Amino acid sequence: MQRSKLFSCLILAAAFLTGSASADILLPGERLFPQAVTATRDGALYVGIGSGVVKVTPGAAQVDPLPVAVGAIRSFAFDERGQSLWACADGPSGKAALKVIDVRSGKLRNEYVLDNNGDCADVTIGRDGTVYLLDSANSAVLRLKRGDEKPLPWLTNDESLRRLGSWSALSVDNLGGIYLLGRDKGSLQRVALRWDGSAGNLVDIKLDRPLNKPVALKPMAKRKLLVTEASGDLTMITVLGETGSLSTLASTIAGPGNLAVVNGVAYVAESQVRLPEGSKPRQFRLVSVDLPKL
Image (cartoon, rainbow, N blue to C red; front, side, top):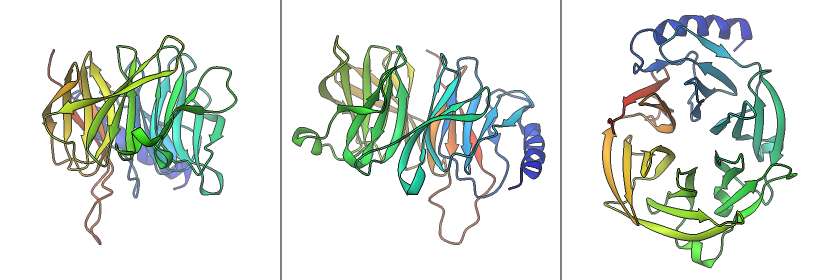
């Protein structure tokens, strides 16, 4: 879509953002199938649409495109310190890459192509600024510390991990660890960070039921996680020790992708990637879900 036409669509779409802070946010354009969304500390949302990125302010008539094209984006994480987006996206020659976008200039700051035919499925940022990314093709978590030239293996695929199947998402928690979703078995694991930054033992969290091909994972509060499932559900997991109880917060989301939390509201990217053959997608949106008060 030409930039002038895209900007006109964005102006039109902004009209949908007024009103309730928890209203769905309609996205402009066709054939978007958005997967990635993330939130900043002040409540702004960044959404991957097509090969580009837009900034959305919930509850305000404002949608701004970033002047950057990075290819199809699967996942975002926002770095408050560096005011940058870390994106799992298509890289050169069809290879997966981790890309860094400066949100102030809208320009691509850096790009890391994954080794070993890796597949950048998800990315998260620790409290100290360390970046962790999920290489789902190799069932591995890579780590990029400040000063590193490229992401390096942190939690690698060995015999003890293969039984878990492929991972689909990861997220830091509020207790100094990282959670991992197992797509094949609908499982949840947690790995602690040792004092030297290395990975501790991987612990299985026993759930009420297996998750249905879980897609994305975000912390909601201490010991509470939000997960999107391929069935169309947004699910809350309450973790107590090594057990987790599940509660359905929303359903019938058409192909839920990533999610972000802003002021007690979850915004889920509705990708519509599993539409029946030949059917036309409705207008793309971020589905809003009011979260339970804690």
